[in-house]
Image (cartoon, rainbow, N blue to C red):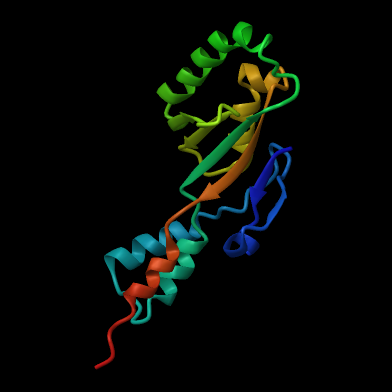
Length: 157
């Protein structure tokens, strides 16, 4: 099952079922523009404005893959060469920034250069393991470490 962090519950790591591929994404461009304007112009004295804009910003997708029951050790070797080639193509196309194997051997982890969870889901489902229903992904939108905005508050005088 694909899940994403719900922005409303992100602080408490609440999960919800992901929107289906092609659904509208809740990552508006407005916070990006606000951050750029703030960087170039005025800053708030408390950091609240910057934190609010950063909190709404998705800059990458963290995709955590796990083998399904269909991915038996006997079936994996036949599909892995195609999986590796297609994953490398996504990396060369700039869609995957980093890729890792989970140290317990239970799957893969990708840091993706996309901001739309639906796009990440489609890209991963189109890989050979996704088409064969041999790997599922938890999709987690990530962005700036917005609590650091607390450090932007001007010291008391």
